[in-house]
Image (cartoon, one colour):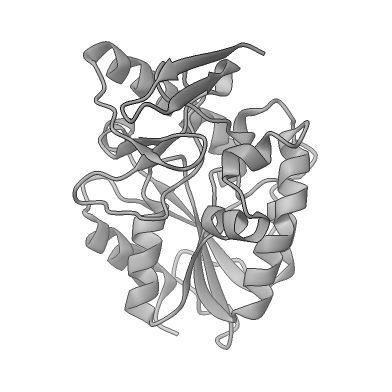
Amino acid sequence: MSVAVLSAPDGAAAIRVGRYGVRPRCQAPAWICPGGARASVHSELLGVATRYPGHLPFPDAHISPIPHPHALGSAGVAGAEESELRVSLVGVSCVGTTTIGRMLADRRGWPFFDLDDEIERHFGTSIERLQARFLTSYSYRKECAVVLERIATANSDCVIALPPSGLRDAFLRVLRRVPGVTVAVHDTPEHILERITFYDIDSRRIDKQLTDEERILQLKEIKADISYFKQSYERADLHVTIAGLDPEASAAAIDARLGRT
């Protein structure tokens, strides 16, 4: 595995680790997400870096898109248990699940959890440093699933922003065990590109302005991300496309699909 160490604006090292070296996080002016999405497109952009579990080559094709015990029809959540409605949002990096999830939780008066933030608090280290301890992304998710289980079992009504790999193996098994609804959030690659902000291996923001060449590269990688996760996102109970919507309208669109409980 090749490692490139480059200079960051604050003098700290910004590391690019092999093919999986960049972690963008969404934070365009209209999409303020303090927690952010800690996954990355499998980009080769120089200057910033981290690792991302979702793209390491550990197949999970043995997990078929089985019906969810609380699956929804297109009409909303009428068939779900009214006493418990955990809403888990998933999407590719920088699609806006953290921003939208926080607003959705505010609309419903529920607690909000960004799973990556909760994992960092639980293990006392950054996502990227934690991932480095595991040989495979499968092992990482298996270890971190305990955090998702704790959140889901302790909160009967809540909104959870999952990482892009949130509907795979260990994370998926937790979501299947508790009553809840999974929502895949979709947007165009061009809109996603405008929300990218970069963070270093210790989750510190890096001021990075993309060149035209880098924007082309990132757009290509975002499209690859969408293709990569397409199969796992087919397991979601609901699919909501937010193209052309601002964060509030996006949260309202998901809220409408869920129905009022």
